[in-house]
Image (cartoon, rainbow, N blue to C red; front, side):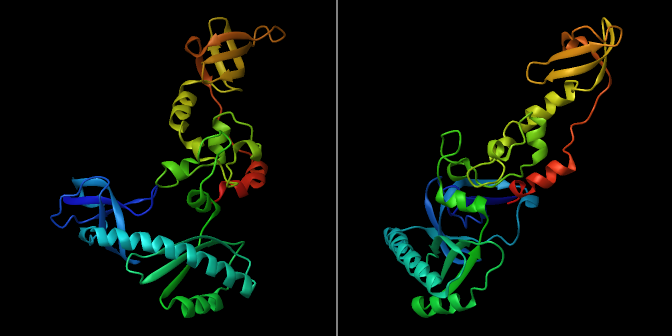
Length: 289
């Protein structure tokens, strides 16, 4: 076991573990820490606690100190610098005629590095741009290409539900989402209906997936062969939410299907929900990052 605190560097970002260095940290306080990017200011997202060694990537870097009034003044000054750096970088991108879209700019707390986040189709040769930016800012420059999900997380906006993006409001990390989830939840595999504003599968498909997986385990699917009080039959319609089944009985195939509850049947042979290869190929682009 080791004592750690969790520090977040973005409002809705990943939480990283640090050694509290004998400092009692309260949630919401700001601290100065050393990271792989340099000296940075972060917010305490998880107070001092003991965690298993298996959950830690050692060695843990220690917290340097809690922020002072001067530190917070530096943070505010850096935010002003970031806006100016954003304008300058956009001008330089236009000058070098590079096919890339600038998304965000970050100064490390000590000003030792400036990070420029951008999106682009494919790889981009930005070596000349880096040299140009370095000559202007006289510090280390890093250009980092990000995906469309990260772009949405940074910029924010409203989803098709009318609410602010989940990724921009409370999702610390992206969870894997697949076409199979949409299929299992009975959704239309229409890209417009299952894609977020970013053009990728909606993150909210993950929220109820555990419940759907449980219901799919206990509910015969369309095409399943079942035994009922009226004899053997095949499920022609299945509502996994209500547990209602429509079963066409073998002894009377021309009659209308009987409506039963899943608890009233015994599964003889169930079927698996599969995504056809053609469907996967057609929707491959929205499943990526």
